[in-house]
Picture 1 (tube, helix red, strand yellow):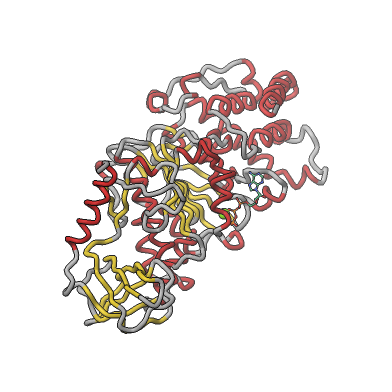
Picture 2: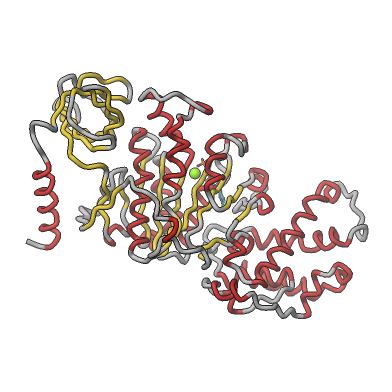
Length: 495
Ligand SMILES: Nc1ncnc2c1ncn2[C@@H]1O[C@H](COP(=O)(O)OP(=O)(O)OP(=O)(O)O)[C@@H](O)[C@H]1O
Ligand SMILES: [Mg+2]
């Protein structure tokens, strides 16, 4: 027998040993909507059961979601067609566990962690619990190192630390998934775990072929539970993806967890809550949603071994940032990236609204010069935004306000810096050179590596070059040379 055969054999032997044919078998007594009720078996909440439905699809996997007197309430991971009263319900004696190993890389998994690509059995050696607690806060390392996303707007102006968790908030069709794809392909993380929860089925292949490509896929694991899968599958897919990320973090890796979308996860929870009789709280979301969300999101972040950097997308209907899911998630995460429909409509992609977005840990992971340059750009953008209406109708007169004059002079360069093609990666060095060229702040080489722990702690004094004068409004007229060098830099970037 090969190693894989032995692992497989032991797995089946284990399951056989776990089965007690009398105590752990019940009978279906009711099926209503998503909820299945049975008399017995003896089981705990969260335990996995098999419903044997000979007239339906054979074996249907389900999970215990409630217990009431003798009645066990279950929800299925699969369609429930063909279940009959009296069908056998077999409790498997364990809660949801995910088979994990390094062989998961390059693979696509379902809500239970089983492969759904046609690349064969994975035969992982270890099992990780899908439902577990976040690491002990006292053992978590501080976030002090930066992780590179390859997206200029993020690495330049919203620096992200290894183990930081950010929300990407946007209305529908503004570019959330495309931005996640860009990050997956260009990040310096060791492993990507991509959770596609409740998204359209056709987007899955698009994501694999267009956004990840063969190289991206080779260092990624995808967990896919499309919108047409039952709500329990969508819910558990989120936990399975997080467990896979935890496995790689335990191996000392820097993991990038790209989660699309938290809103569909919350909606799955709403469907389950309502079906099992929970009272609806805000906008129909059951109280359990507000309890489960922090438990799931807190599982990413740093541990004593490695890190999980999380990007979680949140759909904000009509750009309503105060709807319950957006509001709950924003309070838990360490920053938010807001995508703007106006920018997307102007074909400014990625459509990140810099002034509305914030990375709370950016100051801990960037050096002093980078911080200074990012601050200058933000100030320029804010000055431009304030005066934009006047500028657009031609009511602003050059020379009235030096700050606005400077903002107008740099506006085009900042736009060019922020706009980035999907297949155009940008290294940290290129990104920071761009920042430096626009602002004139000399960013030292040490800040251009992705380990800025030392720079952030030491706070070195920044030696500024002459071109730094560009930030002084009095000299704005003399900046033709500096701006020409920015123009040259950008034309070399885009060629
Ligand atoms: N970086 C980009 N460059 C060019 N076009 C883009 C970019 N990002 C998004 N788009 C355009 O916007 C469309 C929607 O993008 P995407 O699917 O990423 O949005 P989404 O916010 O994930 O949408 P949904 O809410 O439907 O999930 C894409 O089909 C594409 O036409
Ligand atoms: Mg999408």
